[in-house]
Image 1 (cartoon, rainbow, N blue to C red):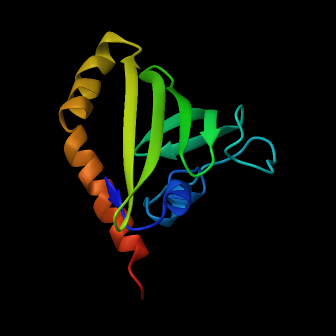
Image 2: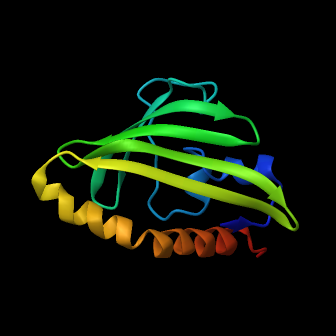
Length: 135
């Protein structure tokens, strides 16, 4: 997805607190105070989209990428990674989800997520563009 910011600023939009700027209802909670929320090993929780999830930062390369492990109990577990690279006019952000259903009942929802992933990312791009508009 295209983000009209340089990579170091675009990547900030995909941090726990950075997503608050463009994701309605996104409110990560940190069980312990943190100085650097994208330091590997940092844990946070979210209750978003009707799901309570536990996230762990697994890797952060400033201005380049951030990766998380995520578990939604009884439903799914896996990783989410965002890599940013410069392009004319800003950044191309590549978002990769690798998820596994934790129960047979969770398989259909995860399959729908996979099928709709392109639309999902397009909505992210629109939400980010709206959040970045002046005014």
